[in-house]
Length: 299
Image (tube, rainbow, N blue to C red; front, side):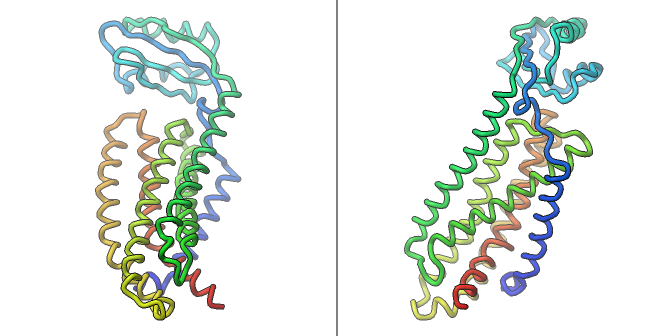
């Protein structure tokens, strides 16, 4: 119940955090990888020993013109190198250098234009917007019988507010990492955002569903008066579940970040930040907002 009573403290903290992140995004922005900005794609086929990604990254560090590149596996013996635009001469230099240590041949070399990058950005934004729309519609339908003291649409709207909070925090983290260590955003980051979307919504719905259950035992006449206490009770009943679930998830993600190699590090980092933000918002932001919304409707 203390969370609901002290909700203004959490509102202030979240507002300051979001304002700082928005300031960082306007000041430093986000470093987009070649998936969005365009560049070159080189597919390599290995015969015999297939190097690990860490070994390849180590071999490619000596090429200054390969700033901001990434590696993806292609089948059991292939690797795809994505980098900023390089010339045929630079491509041949890479292959010749790798051939000193491995039996490797070129399977494909092509350019990814900025048009494809713009298309990826548009589709990524569209994917998030559509996901949010259908989630709001589903929540409004699922909570249609809980129309008092706040409408079913309020549950959906607050869920979106909580998710936007959880979306902005990882963007801020990547803005900082991009500014100081050159971390770039690729298509895997968009995947991470969609995973965060699902995790955040699920965590929030668990609390909202407990509120719905507890409200069902209150008479229509008393729902308005007891709403704050019902929300506080529901948060107390689900807080340990939310924290324990998040801790087990964070353990797995931390292991992926530490031992998963350079390919999955950015993906795991985005999820770690997103899970932390999602756990916070579901407990300290979403449910208190329901109470504040109800109090505002009385005025």
